[in-house]
Image (cartoon, rainbow, N blue to C red; front, top):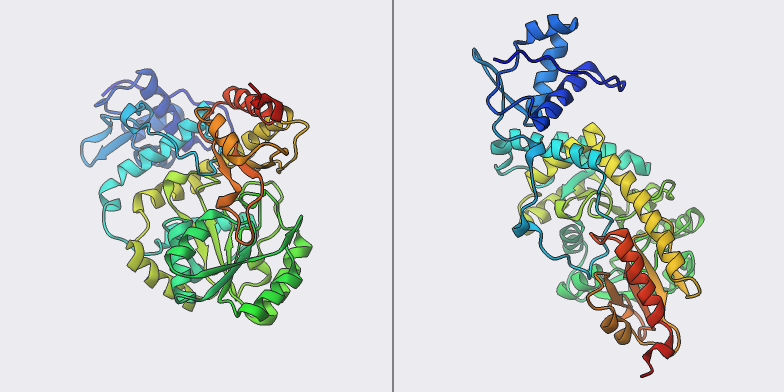
Length: 456
């Protein structure tokens, strides 16, 4: 046993958290080493002049983070590996899929430290997390989901919430409930490629709805319902991928009125809804009995988690969703669920979300300066912009000449439902690319957007 007394920071946090964080700091700096025995709880409490229960909570918190291990009759010992000691494994640093619309990656040291603490908590509970579990999450995970969804103004009963293995499997499961091959599903005329791929795989027909600057047109939606007898409507209503438009509240209410009048189910893909500071309320608030709301975590926390918080129209629908998901994927990853639940409970998830919000706004400013004079659609917290190419410049030209710049560029062909695709491309501003490299790449893009640059 070493004669250890923590240095407690005066940051307004509860004493038990300050002690746990002091343990983490002293492990990282080498003051505490693997195998060191911490002072007995009562002795440390007396030295610090605090309650025994405070020290007990501190040791429990440190154990949950994977910093220490307690043994009855022996004491509390520093573990052999602390989460702060995690280092990058080059074999795990794989290439990014630049066809995806990626959030900026956290770089703040304090935030990364908090994220690693969550990994320590997962490590401390690893064996239990390797077991088969519920197809739609435990009650604790659903409680965390409810907390997260409340930021979008939603307060559904837990029996309607399902923790699902990402938006894609969730959409497959929902469509397996709502449709059979040959059925029609409506969507935006320019829409997310994922729903196109899923519909093609399931032999479901997609019919595009005409749009303006505020989203799909309610009159066009009603006409399509009468013409096609669709089984559902799919929408990505906030920071829509790829156009970045957000359907304003008034238009959402008009759409919800049409859905309610015809009883048409809605699949609401709210992947980006958690990013803006003041996003309109989900359509699920206006049409709760018809809406399958998918709050994916890929864009607002991290794609590698492969999780979404899904709210079904009713408990009965949630049961059907659980059955479909059990067939498709058995269960969401308990390790991912435990990590995200921890991050939500200790505030780390919200810090990640706020970082993404701030960094995406900064990158939009870089893009606006680099592409000044060109026509594009964007929004402050979007991860991409939707660029109209000048006359004389083709999608193929831009994609070929931007190869190797580490900026994801996808042509309009991938997003267009009705009619021939026009000369637009989606430019992703996120991922691992540093801000200065992004700026340089966009400045090069601005050069090759001028048709005269192709001469010679």
